Length: 185
Image (cartoon, rainbow, N blue to C red; front, side, top):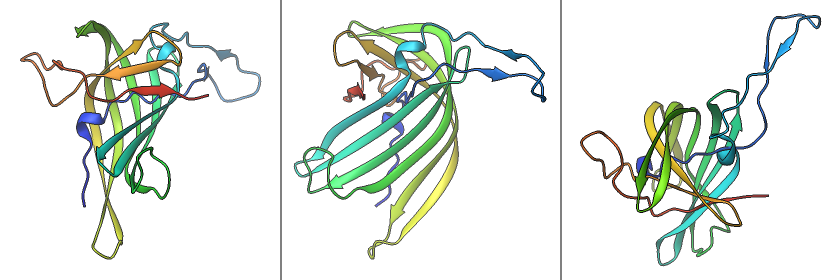
């Protein structure tokens, strides 16, 4: 089984601390703080989306977004499948991993009343597949794609992403993906 969750890829996996950039090389050199863009702050942290892909199978997208200063966040993402589970628990099968950087573009779009921030995403993703005996193989590819994500008011904090399988002529999503990312403690 091979899996390529490109439309679920967003995800703004943000795990949250304020980024500092060190300048120079000795202990006597000054440390300069790069001010984080306030529009990025709500997305920082640990996020999970869990959904059913069949009556007895669920998949979980586990995202962490960490500020690296300015308008950028580092993304660490792990995507697992749970056969025989309706709530993303039990024995996990690793399908996808990603390490990338999100760059806030400073542009928004609106889909179904949700304002989505536009990001560029660059990095690497590894897609795993398994043969009939359960032996895993993997393929690592560069990732260079746009992403859209929008916060939904309320508690717990949640965000939605644009469905990148349904795009308008300008390359913007025209629908929301059927995933809800929930902020973790």
